[in-house]
Length: 262
Image (tube, rainbow, N blue to C red):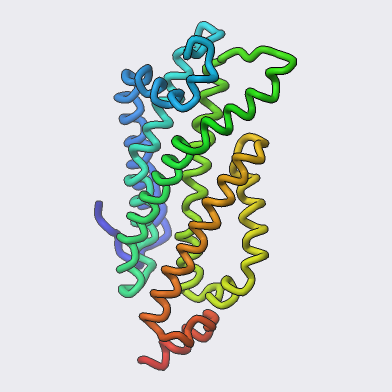
């Protein structure tokens, strides 16, 4: 997938954007069509963590067209997962010409990290979160009502959880670049951890589709760990590249340091 020149007329940039969007859309569409025929098996995989809460371990479709729409949504969901490397690469490749040679060396590691973190978030959700979250939500109605295992309802919640955790797990990458690019001084992020933790708690409440305090706490704990790991890696990179004094630098300090080296 070629990288375009940095300097192009506006309409050429728009044409390049259209080309990359077309690649993404066609990839998603073709993959979804192929996956559609395997959706029954994929749905079984999706509901496996919560089967204990389903009557006879099965979902219920309550409309004539329900089966088709559900299979299409599941096919598109897995299409997004499979095409994630393509989507991320096309986004990065569009902006790549604007980066200088020094910045470009981070592109491949960044793409790899984004993909890895996305899948780690989804795996964490699948193996740790789903059973607890769905169990808590169902438990809220058990004392006064039965629960219909409506397929669309269950699968929509599961897919929202998976995507939400995949996106939330991009946090360490954001923190890492804020630190090493000195957009936010490392020293500030380290010293103002209380405010950061409150922000992470709010984020945890936003990205979890249910109102379960258990789910929010699990997400909050995971984000704290990711935040601390990202800061530790950023600290190592900053010291190795610019020295320990650079931990206090602002962006202006970093730019001046780069100019002094010329």
